[in-house]
Length: 140
Image 1 (cartoon, rainbow, N blue to C red):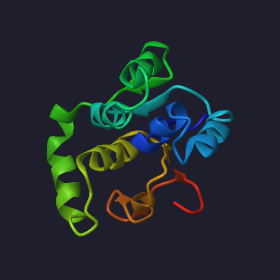
Image 2: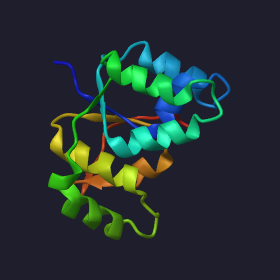
Image 3: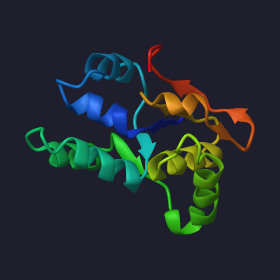
Image 4: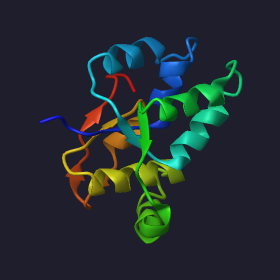
């Protein structure tokens, strides 16, 4: 059974920006992972913003959606209360909006793994106490 992958911002940036510190790692990991990767609009917004210095950066992100590499399968209007609760729970980290959406997605998508370069995901828990399965660099 193929486990669903949830993509975080840093991985998308790493895949598309050859100058990013995580470029080689992200590409190596992605080579062995099944697509599509699930994500949310908050991650897409962050990735487009962080790739504004890359020629056609936002267009490359959108192309990943068009090609089915990324799928947006998260409805904030259905999950706003739970996302808000996560942001409040992890206010000391602090948890940003996109991370809260991804943690909520990890709760909703059974047997999912978060593909990230963000070490904060080592702190976050799904369903209040369960570690979130991660694909993450050792030094992140």
